[in-house]
Length: 257
Image (cartoon, rainbow, N blue to C red; front, side, top):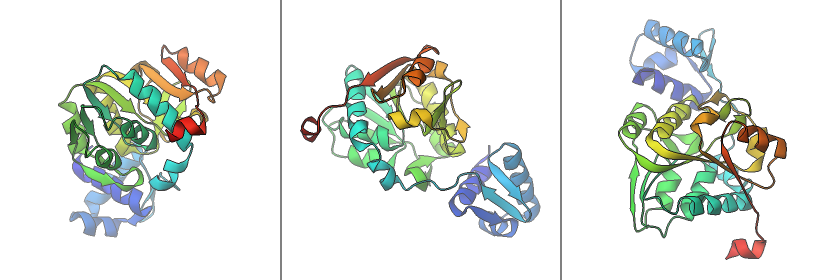
């Protein structure tokens, strides 16, 4: 997908609906070109083509700050499990999302080389003793992250010990999912760049889906969830050869420490 189509997709996702005329003015190209781009995006299942324009597939995504408060305590224990798992790693790639952010919060004292496309993760690690690199790219507001060809190109040129990966849900017979095609492309590049892929998901995500399956379970080395995860879902994911770690949830007093 070329840069113009990525920008068109981002604009449609931001505004929910844009006319051909609007897009032509924004992009500085003819309406004929916009119609061809919209047709291609519609055929790829990324937008809904409508008379006179196009609308987004992505609807009703909760703000990032709201999602941070969902299962917040559980995400802490998943993050603790993930940081224990990465003890020997020297370089980490940290995905966007509220659970990967919780992992970053527990890594602040470690001297690591971290690459991320997440604005909150980069801010969290700004005073860490290691080095933090951002991918570059366009800001995708729904998940406070960088996406697009520049982000994908940057990631394709690196190699890291471990990836901390997030997802919005799963298809138990296929793999992890996301609600954004722009993020899906970045996540695929992240998986290719890592020696070990650790997917972190609170228990509620194992009964939720998304719009796009961005990887198969064969691409995932470890899933970290909690003891609250549905046992049937855990066993089905294990059947794909994924190592599943179910973190115990500590007390409020332990969490406060």
